[in-house]
Length: 155
Image (tube, rainbow, N blue to C red; front, side, top):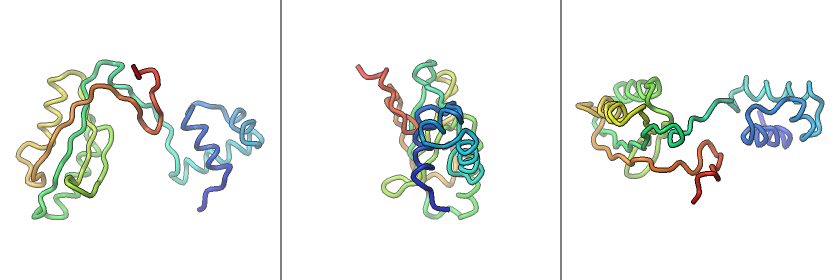
């Protein structure tokens, strides 16, 4: 399905405020309330958008960071797939990207305290034959997340 200009406008509005009413969306896009609802639900059902909360780890005081992983090129494809699925199910990961370059995976990790944060990382990488090497970048300030700039954090 190709997205129309109105679909893109709806997506932009929902990125700014995921709780915006269908009535308000319709008003801003030039649709009726039911027309806006139909488009929004279609975008959701077809997997184009997902409306979710974004937890600001820095605001709640949770340690967070990025785990960069270089996969072992000798690892079995099924082991790598299982590893990725486990990462996706891990309650301490908040985003996972497959990448090209020095690392194959970029993983956002958090914990409710420093001990849980480091344990979460250890559980991912410790003695795992799929992981060739890794590096950790500790988060200090979250300036933008899920395409939403956090202007309140800029000094």
